[in-house]
Image (cartoon, rainbow, N blue to C red; front, side, top):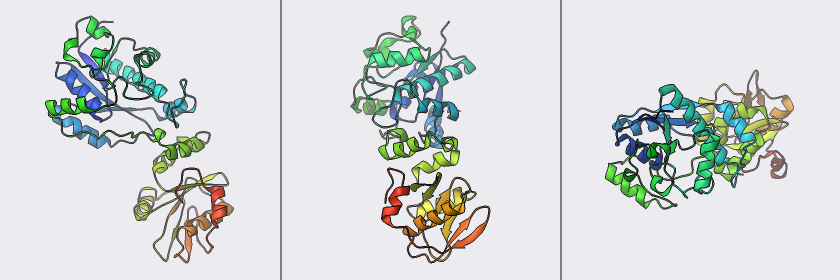
Length: 328
């Protein structure tokens, strides 16, 4: 393969990916920032676009939800501390970057990876190398921030990139990146944070519970993972809002879903992903009343609409329906 000066930058909006993108752009390369969208890594794409705009760069986005979920079910290299398949996830990203590179005639990939920064996917060069091989990108992934700590890539060997213009940053400290950001005049970047819901213990419990159910492919189910108290009632998911903001969100953003709400006082809102049976509705209403004791009457709104008069469920019985990781 003949290399050229077009490359794909795996872009997350974090400082490392922004630094790597700008470093290579400033060396005269045509860089295509690529955000690989996944169900459990929520990002504001508008903000990502705004972040790149001052540098004359346009964000590209790819998504393959079903393929990602299939990977998540049985990751070849297993999970991290929670439900995070970091190595398989990175391989997935690389493969999507490779596909996009073929579309725009780019010949190599760059990433913001820093050697030794992450415990799984960036733990060592052998892991980085494994990910490259699995994605069929051996020697075609450049990591500008750690390149001088790593063996030469094909791009360096063939003189396309001057290795001396790259860096040897490694470990978990962010000092070098902050200094470099100041040097490059970067002011708008995300503070270091996990971001991925699969690394969070509470979210992982909810997602794991969904994995063997059809609802793992349901867009509403995935969006609602971040909100409310989650219950499983006779096979159906029921989600109860925790505060006024969530109640408003449920009523406005998920207005087409079957729901239980109050009609005579401010209170929580409960959502179903599918139309429930009567016994499910009655149990769900008792759960909602547990969190809305001031409400006298509840109303179910779905394929039909009717008033429900019920008593709050006991805490002992409530625990039978609660999905792990919920707040009481």
